[in-house]
Figure 1 (cartoon, rainbow, N blue to C red):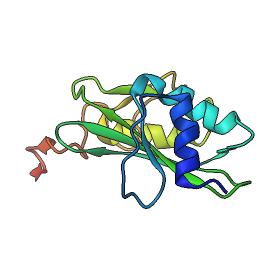
Figure 2 (figure 1 turned 90 degrees about the vertical axis):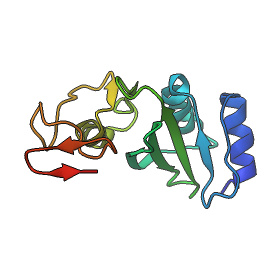
Figure 3 (figure 1 turned 90 degrees about the horizontal axis):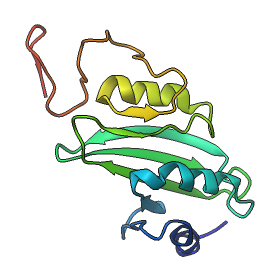
Length: 152
């Protein structure tokens, strides 16, 4: 099992622009959106790392940005990482899809799209999962629904 320092060294070699926050419970890496897919692909395919299990993928709205959060695990080596991408474009937030690497990402990404409005490039079936097409994105901090009197 690799520790946080060893994982940080490997990931910094793959993506020098990565930010490694201090004081996190799990090894955490903030990567630029343009490097997201490539980094995750290398994390999965590298035999020393073998991050072959997508535990979860979600998003958080911080009002100034939205952040996609991905938890990966190596079943073989029993190490975990958190990969985050900060999206500052609230009008058209977009990131590459992980469906080509992890088929389970299909529904996770559809849920994120449905509730936050984040688009996933190259997603095979990006459409709303729960809500009507014109409803809005209810997990955004600026969401308002005057008819049902929902404010965030």
